[in-house]
Amino acid sequence: MFVEEREFDSLSQALKELEKGFDHFQGRENKESTEDILEILIEVAERMKDNYPYHHPMYAGQMLKPPHPVARLAYTLALWLNPNNHALDGGRASSAMEKEAVAELAHMFGWVEHLGHLCSGGTMANMEALWISSQIQPGKILASSQAHYTHSRLSEVLKLDFSPVPVDSLAKMDPKALEDILVTGHVGTVVVTLGTTGFGSLDPLPEILELKKQYGFRIHVDAAYGGYFRLVDNLDCKGQKIFDCLDQVDSLVVDPHKHGLQPYGCGCVLFPDPSVGQLYKHDSPYTYFTSGSLHLGEISLECSRPGASAVALWATMRLLPLAKSGKFARNLAKGRRAALYLFEHLKNNSRYLTIFPPELDIIVFAPQAIQASTISEYSKRFFERAAELDLHLALIELHCELVKEYWPHVNFDQTTVTCLRSCLMKPEHFEWIEKIIQILDRIEFED
Figure (spheres, rainbow, N blue to C red):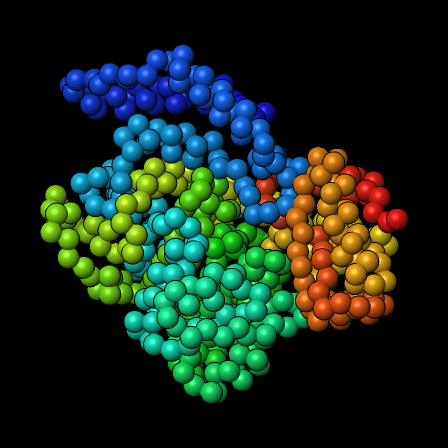
Protein backbone atom coordinates (compact mmCIF):
# COMPACT_ATOMS: atom_id res chain seq x y z
CA MET A 1 0.00 0.00 0.00
CA PHE A 2 1.33 3.42 -0.97
CA VAL A 3 -0.39 5.29 1.90
CA GLU A 4 -0.76 3.92 5.43
CA GLU A 5 -3.39 5.86 7.39
CA ARG A 6 -1.82 4.82 10.67
CA GLU A 7 1.31 6.77 9.72
CA PHE A 8 -0.73 9.97 9.90
CA ASP A 9 -2.16 8.93 13.27
CA SER A 10 1.38 8.42 14.61
CA LEU A 11 2.49 11.78 13.24
CA SER A 12 -0.51 13.56 14.74
CA GLN A 13 0.18 12.12 18.19
CA ALA A 14 3.88 12.95 17.98
CA LEU A 15 3.10 16.53 16.91
CA LYS A 16 0.85 16.99 19.92
CA GLU A 17 3.69 15.81 22.14
CA LEU A 18 6.12 18.21 20.43
CA GLU A 19 3.70 21.08 20.88
CA LYS A 20 3.71 20.57 24.67
CA GLY A 21 7.31 21.77 24.71
CA PHE A 22 6.29 25.14 23.29
CA ASP A 23 2.72 25.61 24.48
CA HIS A 24 3.64 28.63 26.65
CA PHE A 25 4.37 30.61 23.47
CA GLN A 26 1.58 32.36 21.67
CA GLY A 27 0.54 30.56 18.52
CA ARG A 28 1.06 32.24 15.18
CA GLU A 29 -1.75 32.55 12.72
CA ASN A 30 -1.71 30.66 9.47
CA LYS A 31 -2.78 33.30 6.99
CA GLU A 32 -3.58 30.78 4.27
CA SER A 33 -6.92 28.97 4.38
CA THR A 34 -7.00 25.20 4.64
CA GLU A 35 -8.96 25.09 1.41
CA ASP A 36 -6.31 27.06 -0.49
CA ILE A 37 -3.55 24.83 0.83
CA LEU A 38 -5.48 21.67 -0.05
CA GLU A 39 -6.08 22.95 -3.57
CA ILE A 40 -2.34 23.43 -4.09
CA LEU A 41 -1.52 20.06 -2.55
CA ILE A 42 -3.94 18.30 -4.89
CA GLU A 43 -2.25 20.07 -7.78
CA VAL A 44 1.14 18.91 -6.47
CA ALA A 45 -0.18 15.34 -6.22
CA GLU A 46 -1.33 15.50 -9.83
CA ARG A 47 2.08 16.73 -10.96
CA MET A 48 3.88 14.07 -8.90
CA LYS A 49 2.02 11.31 -10.71
CA ASP A 50 4.44 11.97 -13.58
CA ASN A 51 7.05 9.73 -11.98
CA TYR A 52 8.19 6.14 -12.12
CA PRO A 53 7.02 3.98 -9.16
CA TYR A 54 10.29 4.38 -7.27
CA HIS A 55 8.77 3.00 -4.07
CA HIS A 56 7.64 -0.29 -5.64
CA PRO A 57 9.68 -3.48 -6.31
CA MET A 58 8.62 -3.26 -9.96
CA TYR A 59 11.00 -0.32 -10.13
CA ALA A 60 14.34 -2.09 -10.43
CA GLY A 61 16.32 0.47 -12.38
CA GLN A 62 18.39 3.20 -10.78
CA MET A 63 19.64 3.47 -7.18
CA LEU A 64 16.32 4.54 -5.71
CA LYS A 65 15.02 3.11 -2.45
CA PRO A 66 12.04 4.45 -0.51
CA PRO A 67 12.72 5.87 2.95
CA HIS A 68 11.46 3.85 5.87
CA PRO A 69 8.12 5.10 7.28
CA VAL A 70 9.80 6.08 10.55
CA ALA A 71 12.31 8.18 8.57
CA ARG A 72 9.52 9.91 6.64
CA LEU A 73 7.57 10.63 9.82
CA ALA A 74 10.55 11.77 11.90
CA TYR A 75 11.71 14.04 9.07
CA THR A 76 8.22 15.54 8.75
CA LEU A 77 7.90 15.97 12.50
CA ALA A 78 11.21 17.85 12.62
CA LEU A 79 10.01 20.20 9.88
CA TRP A 80 7.56 21.82 12.30
CA LEU A 81 10.66 23.34 13.92
CA ASN A 82 12.88 23.23 10.80
CA PRO A 83 16.20 22.97 12.70
CA ASN A 84 19.49 23.97 11.08
CA ASN A 85 22.43 21.77 12.08
CA HIS A 86 25.08 24.34 11.29
CA ALA A 87 25.26 25.84 14.77
CA LEU A 88 23.66 24.82 18.05
CA ASP A 89 21.61 28.02 17.96
CA GLY A 90 19.60 26.56 15.12
CA GLY A 91 19.44 22.88 16.04
CA ARG A 92 20.27 21.88 19.58
CA ALA A 93 18.37 18.60 19.74
CA SER A 94 18.94 17.64 16.11
CA SER A 95 22.68 18.38 16.39
CA ALA A 96 22.94 16.00 19.34
CA MET A 97 21.00 13.40 17.37
CA GLU A 98 23.33 13.85 14.41
CA LYS A 99 26.40 13.24 16.55
CA GLU A 100 24.84 10.08 17.97
CA ALA A 101 23.79 8.81 14.53
CA VAL A 102 27.19 9.53 12.97
CA ALA A 103 28.90 7.74 15.87
CA GLU A 104 26.78 4.67 15.11
CA LEU A 105 27.83 4.80 11.47
CA ALA A 106 31.50 5.06 12.48
CA HIS A 107 31.05 2.12 14.84
CA MET A 108 29.57 0.08 11.95
CA PHE A 109 32.92 0.45 10.15
CA GLY A 110 34.90 -0.60 13.23
CA TRP A 111 35.96 2.88 14.33
CA VAL A 112 36.02 3.95 17.97
CA GLU A 113 37.40 7.46 17.54
CA HIS A 114 36.15 9.47 14.60
CA LEU A 115 35.23 12.85 13.21
CA GLY A 116 32.32 13.19 10.84
CA HIS A 117 28.98 14.68 9.99
CA LEU A 118 26.02 14.41 7.65
CA CYS A 119 25.85 16.35 4.41
CA SER A 120 23.69 16.62 1.31
CA GLY A 121 25.00 13.45 -0.32
CA GLY A 122 27.99 11.58 -1.68
CA THR A 123 29.21 14.42 -3.89
CA MET A 124 29.64 16.86 -1.03
CA ALA A 125 30.97 14.14 1.28
CA ASN A 126 33.59 13.05 -1.26
CA MET A 127 34.62 16.64 -1.88
CA GLU A 128 35.30 17.15 1.83
CA ALA A 129 37.33 13.94 1.99
CA LEU A 130 39.42 14.87 -1.06
CA TRP A 131 39.91 18.40 0.27
CA ILE A 132 41.13 17.09 3.64
CA SER A 133 43.44 14.61 1.88
CA SER A 134 44.93 17.35 -0.26
CA GLN A 135 45.71 19.38 2.87
CA ILE A 136 47.42 16.48 4.63
CA GLN A 137 49.12 14.84 1.67
CA PRO A 138 49.18 16.88 -1.54
CA GLY A 139 49.40 14.98 -4.78
CA LYS A 140 47.46 13.38 -7.58
CA ILE A 141 44.06 11.77 -6.95
CA LEU A 142 43.58 8.27 -8.36
CA ALA A 143 40.30 6.38 -8.78
CA SER A 144 39.29 3.45 -10.94
CA SER A 145 37.86 4.03 -14.40
CA GLN A 146 34.59 2.58 -13.01
CA ALA A 147 34.51 4.98 -10.04
CA HIS A 148 31.82 7.63 -9.92
CA TYR A 149 32.54 10.54 -12.25
CA THR A 150 32.29 12.90 -9.28
CA HIS A 151 35.91 12.19 -8.32
CA SER A 152 37.40 13.54 -11.52
CA ARG A 153 35.03 16.50 -11.48
CA LEU A 154 35.69 17.30 -7.82
CA SER A 155 39.42 17.04 -8.40
CA GLU A 156 39.02 19.68 -11.08
CA VAL A 157 37.00 21.89 -8.71
CA LEU A 158 39.71 21.51 -6.05
CA LYS A 159 42.48 22.16 -8.61
CA LEU A 160 43.96 18.71 -8.04
CA ASP A 161 45.49 16.42 -10.66
CA PHE A 162 43.41 13.33 -11.34
CA SER A 163 44.09 10.08 -13.19
CA PRO A 164 41.81 7.08 -13.73
CA VAL A 165 43.18 3.61 -12.99
CA PRO A 166 42.28 0.77 -15.39
CA VAL A 167 40.06 -2.01 -14.09
CA ASP A 168 40.28 -5.79 -14.39
CA SER A 169 37.70 -8.13 -15.90
CA LEU A 170 35.51 -7.78 -12.80
CA ALA A 171 35.34 -3.98 -13.13
CA LYS A 172 37.58 -3.57 -10.07
CA MET A 173 40.65 -1.35 -9.81
CA ASP A 174 43.61 -3.33 -11.15
CA PRO A 175 46.36 -3.35 -8.46
CA LYS A 176 49.09 -3.84 -11.09
CA ALA A 177 47.84 -0.87 -13.10
CA LEU A 178 47.66 1.12 -9.86
CA GLU A 179 51.28 0.32 -8.99
CA ASP A 180 52.39 1.33 -12.49
CA ILE A 181 51.07 4.82 -11.70
CA LEU A 182 52.34 4.85 -8.11
CA VAL A 183 55.95 4.26 -9.16
CA THR A 184 55.88 7.56 -11.03
CA GLY A 185 55.40 9.37 -7.70
CA HIS A 186 53.29 12.41 -6.83
CA VAL A 187 50.20 10.42 -5.77
CA GLY A 188 48.47 11.81 -2.70
CA THR A 189 45.22 9.83 -2.45
CA VAL A 190 43.78 6.65 -3.90
CA VAL A 191 39.98 6.45 -3.96
CA VAL A 192 38.75 2.92 -3.32
CA THR A 193 35.18 2.37 -4.49
CA LEU A 194 33.05 -0.11 -2.58
CA GLY A 195 30.04 -0.47 -4.81
CA THR A 196 30.72 1.03 -8.24
CA THR A 197 27.80 2.84 -9.83
CA GLY A 198 27.67 0.54 -12.84
CA PHE A 199 28.24 -2.94 -11.42
CA GLY A 200 28.39 -2.61 -7.63
CA SER A 201 31.97 -3.92 -7.83
CA LEU A 202 34.28 -3.74 -4.81
CA ASP A 203 37.82 -2.45 -5.39
CA PRO A 204 40.49 -4.77 -3.86
CA LEU A 205 41.11 -2.87 -0.64
CA PRO A 206 43.46 -5.47 0.99
CA GLU A 207 45.86 -5.31 -1.98
CA ILE A 208 45.67 -1.51 -2.07
CA LEU A 209 46.48 -1.37 1.65
CA GLU A 210 49.61 -3.43 0.94
CA LEU A 211 50.63 -0.93 -1.74
CA LYS A 212 50.07 1.91 0.73
CA LYS A 213 52.77 0.43 2.99
CA GLN A 214 55.28 0.85 0.18
CA TYR A 215 54.12 4.08 -1.45
CA GLY A 216 52.61 5.99 1.48
CA PHE A 217 49.47 7.47 -0.11
CA ARG A 218 46.19 8.14 1.69
CA ILE A 219 43.19 5.88 1.11
CA HIS A 220 39.74 7.36 0.78
CA VAL A 221 36.87 4.88 0.49
CA ASP A 222 33.84 5.86 -1.51
CA ALA A 223 31.27 3.51 0.01
CA ALA A 224 28.35 5.80 -0.83
CA TYR A 225 26.49 2.85 -2.31
CA GLY A 226 27.98 -0.22 -0.69
CA GLY A 227 28.98 0.85 2.82
CA TYR A 228 26.05 -0.72 4.65
CA PHE A 229 26.92 -4.15 3.20
CA ARG A 230 29.48 -4.48 5.97
CA LEU A 231 26.53 -5.74 8.03
CA VAL A 232 25.32 -8.55 5.77
CA ASP A 233 26.21 -12.21 6.19
CA ASN A 234 26.01 -13.35 2.56
CA LEU A 235 29.01 -11.71 0.90
CA ASP A 236 31.56 -13.98 -0.74
CA CYS A 237 34.90 -14.47 1.02
CA LYS A 238 36.72 -11.77 -0.96
CA GLY A 239 33.95 -9.27 -0.36
CA GLN A 240 33.94 -9.98 3.38
CA LYS A 241 37.71 -9.48 3.58
CA ILE A 242 37.36 -6.12 1.86
CA PHE A 243 34.81 -4.83 4.36
CA ASP A 244 36.86 -6.21 7.26
CA CYS A 245 39.70 -3.84 6.31
CA LEU A 246 37.72 -0.60 6.65
CA ASP A 247 39.24 0.22 10.04
CA GLN A 248 42.57 0.84 8.25
CA VAL A 249 41.53 3.60 5.82
CA ASP A 250 41.94 7.37 6.15
CA SER A 251 38.43 8.54 5.26
CA LEU A 252 35.12 7.10 4.18
CA VAL A 253 31.86 8.22 2.64
CA VAL A 254 28.51 6.46 2.97
CA ASP A 255 25.07 7.60 1.80
CA PRO A 256 22.22 6.82 4.20
CA HIS A 257 19.84 8.00 1.48
CA LYS A 258 20.78 4.92 -0.54
CA HIS A 259 20.70 1.73 1.54
CA GLY A 260 20.16 3.54 4.84
CA LEU A 261 16.42 4.07 4.19
CA GLN A 262 16.64 7.87 4.35
CA PRO A 263 15.03 10.67 2.33
CA TYR A 264 17.28 12.65 0.01
CA GLY A 265 19.68 14.14 0.74
CA CYS A 266 21.60 12.43 3.47
CA GLY A 267 25.26 11.59 2.99
CA CYS A 268 27.99 11.16 5.58
CA VAL A 269 31.74 11.77 5.59
CA LEU A 270 33.90 10.10 8.26
CA PHE A 271 37.52 10.31 9.37
CA PRO A 272 39.07 7.93 11.94
CA ASP A 273 41.49 10.68 13.04
CA PRO A 274 39.59 13.44 14.88
CA SER A 275 42.57 15.79 14.57
CA VAL A 276 41.62 16.53 10.95
CA GLY A 277 39.03 18.84 12.47
CA GLN A 278 41.71 21.51 12.84
CA LEU A 279 41.78 21.84 9.05
CA TYR A 280 38.18 23.08 9.09
CA LYS A 281 38.98 25.86 11.57
CA HIS A 282 37.39 29.19 10.71
CA ASP A 283 36.06 32.28 12.46
CA SER A 284 32.41 33.30 12.58
CA PRO A 285 31.80 36.38 14.74
CA TYR A 286 28.07 35.76 15.09
CA THR A 287 27.44 32.00 15.02
CA TYR A 288 29.10 29.94 17.74
CA PHE A 289 28.15 31.57 21.04
CA THR A 290 25.44 29.47 22.66
CA SER A 291 27.68 26.62 23.74
CA GLY A 292 31.32 25.77 24.34
CA SER A 293 30.66 22.33 22.79
CA LEU A 294 31.58 21.47 19.24
CA HIS A 295 29.24 22.92 16.65
CA LEU A 296 28.82 20.76 13.56
CA GLY A 297 29.39 23.83 11.39
CA GLU A 298 32.94 23.92 12.71
CA ILE A 299 33.74 20.58 11.03
CA SER A 300 31.82 20.99 7.80
CA LEU A 301 32.31 22.81 4.51
CA GLU A 302 28.56 23.29 4.22
CA CYS A 303 26.87 25.89 6.38
CA SER A 304 23.11 25.53 6.67
CA ARG A 305 22.08 21.87 6.73
CA PRO A 306 18.69 20.29 7.48
CA GLY A 307 18.43 19.05 11.03
CA ALA A 308 15.47 17.00 9.84
CA SER A 309 17.89 14.63 8.06
CA ALA A 310 19.66 13.90 11.33
CA VAL A 311 16.36 13.37 13.15
CA ALA A 312 15.16 10.92 10.49
CA LEU A 313 18.42 8.94 10.50
CA TRP A 314 18.54 8.82 14.30
CA ALA A 315 14.94 7.57 14.47
CA THR A 316 15.55 4.90 11.84
CA MET A 317 18.57 3.53 13.66
CA ARG A 318 16.62 3.46 16.93
CA LEU A 319 14.04 1.26 15.25
CA LEU A 320 16.51 -0.74 13.13
CA PRO A 321 19.94 -0.83 14.84
CA LEU A 322 23.04 -1.35 12.71
CA ALA A 323 23.70 -4.88 13.94
CA LYS A 324 24.90 -7.84 11.87
CA SER A 325 22.14 -10.04 13.23
CA GLY A 326 19.45 -7.37 13.11
CA LYS A 327 16.43 -6.82 10.90
CA PHE A 328 18.13 -4.02 8.94
CA ALA A 329 21.02 -6.31 7.97
CA ARG A 330 18.70 -9.19 7.07
CA ASN A 331 16.64 -6.95 4.80
CA LEU A 332 19.80 -5.64 3.11
CA ALA A 333 20.97 -9.20 2.50
CA LYS A 334 17.67 -9.95 0.71
CA GLY A 335 18.63 -7.60 -2.11
CA ARG A 336 21.86 -9.49 -2.69
CA ARG A 337 19.99 -12.81 -2.58
CA ALA A 338 17.58 -11.49 -5.21
CA ALA A 339 20.46 -10.36 -7.41
CA LEU A 340 22.25 -13.71 -7.16
CA TYR A 341 19.02 -15.55 -7.95
CA LEU A 342 18.32 -13.38 -10.97
CA PHE A 343 21.90 -13.73 -12.22
CA GLU A 344 21.69 -17.53 -12.15
CA HIS A 345 18.44 -17.44 -14.10
CA LEU A 346 19.87 -15.09 -16.73
CA LYS A 347 23.14 -17.04 -17.03
CA ASN A 348 21.28 -20.29 -17.67
CA ASN A 349 18.84 -18.82 -20.19
CA SER A 350 19.95 -18.63 -23.83
CA ARG A 351 17.95 -15.42 -24.33
CA TYR A 352 20.46 -13.41 -22.30
CA LEU A 353 24.11 -12.45 -22.06
CA THR A 354 25.65 -12.04 -18.62
CA ILE A 355 29.04 -10.75 -17.51
CA PHE A 356 30.03 -11.71 -13.94
CA PRO A 357 28.08 -12.45 -10.74
CA PRO A 358 27.02 -9.46 -8.63
CA GLU A 359 29.10 -8.62 -5.58
CA LEU A 360 26.29 -6.59 -4.05
CA ASP A 361 22.79 -6.19 -5.52
CA ILE A 362 23.37 -4.77 -9.02
CA ILE A 363 22.90 -6.90 -12.15
CA VAL A 364 24.14 -6.08 -15.67
CA PHE A 365 22.91 -8.19 -18.59
CA ALA A 366 21.87 -7.94 -22.23
CA PRO A 367 19.67 -9.66 -24.80
CA GLN A 368 21.46 -12.33 -26.82
CA ALA A 369 22.82 -11.32 -30.24
CA ILE A 370 25.99 -11.81 -32.29
CA GLN A 371 26.93 -8.18 -32.90
CA ALA A 372 27.54 -5.40 -30.37
CA SER A 373 25.40 -2.99 -32.39
CA THR A 374 22.50 -5.44 -32.37
CA ILE A 375 22.88 -6.05 -28.62
CA SER A 376 22.67 -2.30 -28.08
CA GLU A 377 19.55 -2.04 -30.23
CA TYR A 378 17.91 -4.99 -28.49
CA SER A 379 18.78 -3.61 -25.04
CA LYS A 380 17.06 -0.31 -25.76
CA ARG A 381 14.03 -2.11 -27.15
CA PHE A 382 13.97 -4.44 -24.13
CA PHE A 383 14.12 -1.44 -21.77
CA GLU A 384 11.12 0.20 -23.45
CA ARG A 385 9.01 -2.94 -23.60
CA ALA A 386 9.73 -3.80 -19.98
CA ALA A 387 8.42 -0.36 -19.01
CA GLU A 388 5.25 -1.04 -21.00
CA LEU A 389 4.77 -4.07 -18.72
CA ASP A 390 5.37 -1.88 -15.63
CA LEU A 391 8.84 -3.27 -15.00
CA HIS A 392 11.35 -0.43 -14.91
CA LEU A 393 15.02 -1.17 -15.58
CA ALA A 394 18.01 1.02 -16.49
CA LEU A 395 20.51 1.15 -19.35
CA ILE A 396 24.29 1.26 -19.11
CA GLU A 397 26.89 1.97 -21.81
CA LEU A 398 29.98 -0.25 -21.49
CA HIS A 399 33.29 -0.23 -23.30
CA CYS A 400 33.51 -3.42 -25.30
CA GLU A 401 36.91 -4.30 -23.79
CA LEU A 402 35.12 -4.94 -20.50
CA VAL A 403 32.86 -7.67 -21.91
CA LYS A 404 34.92 -9.33 -24.66
CA GLU A 405 36.18 -12.00 -22.26
CA TYR A 406 32.62 -13.02 -21.40
CA TRP A 407 31.11 -12.88 -24.89
CA PRO A 408 33.69 -14.58 -27.17
CA HIS A 409 31.11 -15.25 -29.90
CA VAL A 410 30.12 -11.58 -30.28
CA ASN A 411 31.38 -9.47 -33.17
CA PHE A 412 32.33 -6.14 -31.62
CA ASP A 413 31.52 -3.84 -34.51
CA GLN A 414 31.58 -0.73 -32.29
CA THR A 415 33.62 0.45 -29.30
CA THR A 416 30.77 0.46 -26.77
CA VAL A 417 27.73 -1.68 -26.13
CA THR A 418 24.46 -0.76 -24.43
CA CYS A 419 23.30 -3.23 -21.76
CA LEU A 420 20.53 -3.48 -19.20
CA ARG A 421 21.17 -2.73 -15.54
CA SER A 422 19.05 -3.45 -12.49
CA CYS A 423 19.45 -2.40 -8.85
CA LEU A 424 17.62 -4.89 -6.64
CA MET A 425 18.04 -2.80 -3.50
CA LYS A 426 14.60 -3.10 -1.92
CA PRO A 427 14.09 -6.05 0.46
CA GLU A 428 10.79 -6.70 -1.34
CA HIS A 429 12.72 -7.49 -4.51
CA PHE A 430 13.46 -10.95 -3.11
CA GLU A 431 9.75 -11.70 -2.73
CA TRP A 432 9.02 -10.27 -6.18
CA ILE A 433 11.92 -11.82 -8.07
CA GLU A 434 9.87 -14.63 -9.64
CA LYS A 435 7.32 -12.08 -10.88
CA ILE A 436 10.16 -9.97 -12.31
CA ILE A 437 11.63 -13.00 -14.06
CA GLN A 438 8.26 -13.90 -15.56
CA ILE A 439 8.01 -10.43 -17.09
CA LEU A 440 11.60 -10.49 -18.36
CA ASP A 441 11.04 -13.80 -20.10
CA ARG A 442 7.90 -12.50 -21.83
CA ILE A 443 9.59 -9.55 -23.47
CA GLU A 444 10.08 -9.77 -27.22
CA PHE A 445 13.12 -7.81 -28.39
CA GLU A 446 14.09 -9.32 -31.72
CA ASP A 447 12.88 -8.02 -35.10
